[in-house]
Length: 239
Image (cartoon, rainbow, N blue to C red; front, side, top):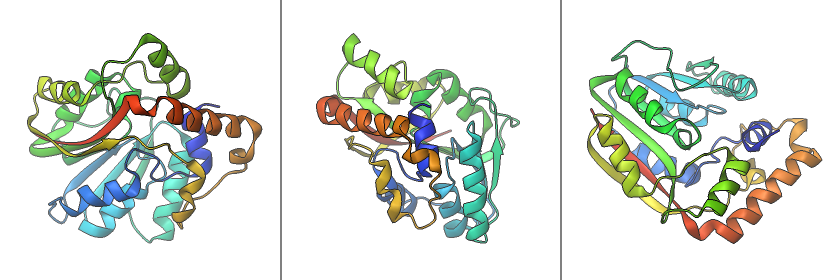
């Protein structure tokens, strides 16, 4: 079991920096035409995908590499009488869609845990010429020491954490234009048990195991001790 397995066990719908409050902030400023095609990469339990489908009446596809996440996303959509499509995939660095398919690609705390440049290039590839990317990502406040980076890799599986400036350069290098930071701020600790405010969160028995508790404690202690070295940004980038 790793950190992301624990998120799945808790049915965490908004365990990314900024939480669902941050999601609502950028969503309220988003302009999407009814019927637009949306892809959420790393959809988790489908909270954001379902919110987008409900608010904008768009066609949403969510993909994730964890079966537990996909199953809970499907259950959420069913309970809300919505029709997003959720797909289990083996990996995210080669998106299973043709070029220029989507009007919006969305990722919330996903890119940093994958081969970053490869995945950002994939975002660009599957977007239509008038499309846009919304990406919420953890960022380093300044270049991280090898000690901190090692612990980040052991706890979260991320091999590097770009700064806010470095993130913008990555998007631009992939071909995106008008890259802007919608929101930024300090990374708060992710309290996976606080997902109770999400009425549709489905918590699995694994969430109460000793292994899961140890990972939750590790995350909390890491953020209390090292959190000052991290921030986050919600980036908007256009084709």
